[in-house]
Amino acid sequence: MPQRYLRFFIFSLLSGNAAFAQPVVNVLGPVNAASYRTSGLPGSGIARGSMFSLFGTDLGPQSPTWAYSFPLPTTLGGSSGTSVSVTVGNTTASAILLFASSVQINAILPSSVPAGTGTLTVTNGSQTSAPVPIHVVDSAFGIFAYNSAGTGQAIATDVNYQLNTIIHTFHPGDSVILWGTGLGPISASDAEAPPAGDVGDAITMHIGNSTAPVSYHGRAPCCAGLDQIVFSIPANIAGCHVPVGVETSGGVSNIGTIAISQSGQVCSDSLLGQDLVNNLASGHKVRFGLVRLESYLTRRAGQSGADTAVATFSELSPDAAGLAQYGVSSGYCVAVDCSWGCNSSQGAAFSLSLYDSSPSQLDAGSLSVQGDSTVALTRYGGPYAAVLSSQNGARFLWTNHSYAVNGTGGADVGAFSPTETAGKLSAQFTNLTDNQSVPRSSDLNLEWTGGDPSLQNGQVTIGGLSATSDFSNLQVFQCTAPLAPHQFTIPAWVLSTLPPSGSYAIGSPPWAIGFVWIGQSNTPVTFNPAGLDRAILTDIFYNRAEVNFQ
Image (cartoon, rainbow, N blue to C red; front, side, top):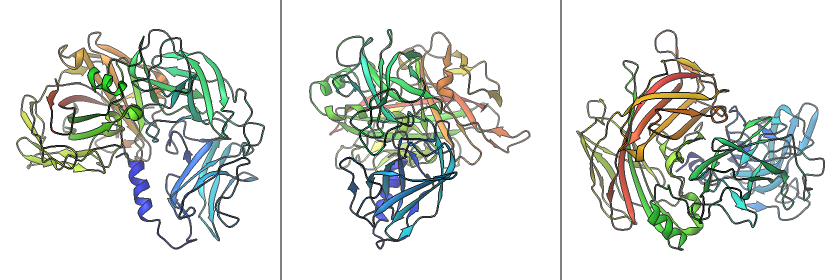
């Protein structure tokens, strides 16, 4: 379960407090309602005229309340209900409320609020929260995502407003609409239906490794605070998970993906397999399981990295095809904000956010991985994860060793026990030196040796992360690239979403909290327990270099 869903669940448990207890805005503070980018990350400011979200306790009424008509209110739940006040410099304004509950508020920041650093308070009845910081900017776009968490399949439609998914693809030359918030302020009232017309300065629409021509970037005439970007799909781009990002004066947005095919209505590179994608397109539900063992090996002596296991078991319907998110298509990169945890297991290498964003997870009972010792996986609401270590604390995963994954079976999935022989360290960077400085404003060209063309359809997986010293800002990226050229370029627009690397003191000088890694997925072992159409078990060994993103 992504951490944001976990937070929402925890706050729901706490929502039975007495009416009009003092509201508490949690440490996230205000976040873009589409991207949820953590404060301090590039592109994380709250744009004038944009929708933002607050999370916490006792923020509003126990029964959720919505604003249904124009003009939109500044108070929800009656005259003594919930309101939000924002102060920047000498300007104080009431936010325009869209939704209020005890644990969450969605609101619009008035366009009249100037850019700058200020404070925000929430009033619920007679009680007002302590002020929290807000950083207001002219523009900072957020892309709405299918999973409502700012990652994976973007909310994008064709001109007939049909949602893009792996079973309703776009094609080169199509005009499409990307939905989000944060293009900038308007001169009209944000409480009324907005006027049509471009908003803010010119933008750059990144798609894959290209830019797309934009014909409109402004408010959706139906809805206050909601932005549309109309652009055309460039030629020679295809894939189930092609990255998209919007660059404004406030930086690059969160990165989503869209599905593109050269013809037809389905894409062809989903991890589900073409038969299951076709089943979805025919109107059927599919059930798919993925178990993945991962080993991260740092080449600096004494830093062996970590071994982890993650597992997801998902039911997908045609209406939820946008949740079938597994990585990124070949030749491209995505990035994910992991500042508050991409999953609930701190050592599980962020894989849940990069491999399965579906909240429709199935109960497979108790899971364990058996090698030289046995390690149980913990279920975090839906997905399973564990840090793998031997009884003596040594590494768990070794190349060419055999591993069994045992599932007892649960309410949705039958028992299983597939076995695989682990793969190998298949590729190694040749142009990265330990602790070298890597600019986030430039393309990063990577070169490597080794690799096995028989693995991962002749591709490699490249990933990395950068975090501040206190880990309050942490961004992870992942790329899929062809093996054969033995080189790949990570675009600057992707790297620009990373925070500058902090450091930790191991030796002298201190080492940066930045990594780039490369590996190849082992040939999957397919197994078919009761309750699933297909499940696969695979592993990957990453060679990891430590770098300093600046």
